[in-house]
Image 1 (cartoon, rainbow, N blue to C red):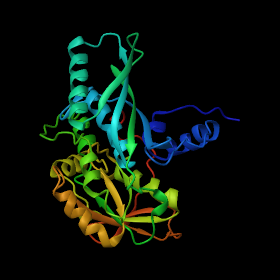
Image 2: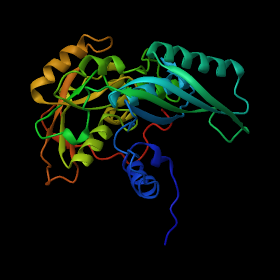
Image 3: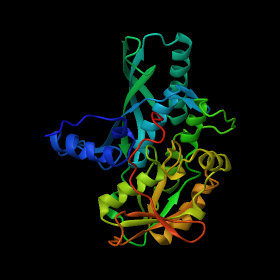
Image 4: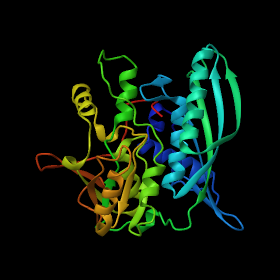
Length: 338
């Protein structure tokens, strides 16, 4: 039997990530409360229900236009709670710091984390710090846990998806992935693009009283394409996106065209995708467009019965009217972006 080893592709949010979760963590870490589909686990207490999530953050460079690894850690944790139908309340943070990181850089990261937490109305209540020898870390790694109070009126559940539902996105996709890519100065490209890293809680709050809102996801690793695959695989349905309807900034589109990246696999850290009943999709768009940074919210696709003639459950209708399959991500197009 051939020995298997972990590769960078196991962390890109694609097929190998899914197989790693299913074959290792689900199989050997079984517990009734272990939720590998939603972004947070839901647990009942005597008088209320809480959601809890955990995440780890590693990005190169540590600082990028629009944020750094500290603010990213807060936003990522808050967003996982938000799309699970919870009001984020408390965070923990654990830092693994590589020997040689400048004190000034560390201070900027911690200050950005505190500012992001203040803006998101959450409290960082505990933490831990470890230092590893030079060459054994990536500058700064941050692990978080987050706790939120489940809203009694939210019923976000991937099992509610059905054929005919609409896919809605809150704004342009891929800004974070491209902003981090250009911050590495590997391609000699100048850009004013900044990461979209932000709390998505205002977007959730704007629509969480609409009965037809069925499921929410923030399209981080693997981008919008892999978010769609997660939904399709969990429901045995297919999803068709409309390329002409997907909001994409001119800068992201230009960079992707020049460098050969597919924007549908690039991470966003301040956007949200909703699956909603068709009769409420226009209302969701209207409310999101009234939110800060939501003016480009749009209906971008629909849920279909499983298309058995295709090996892939997610497809894209192109600008010229053709249809191409958005396969599960295999390689890692942009390593270490969240």
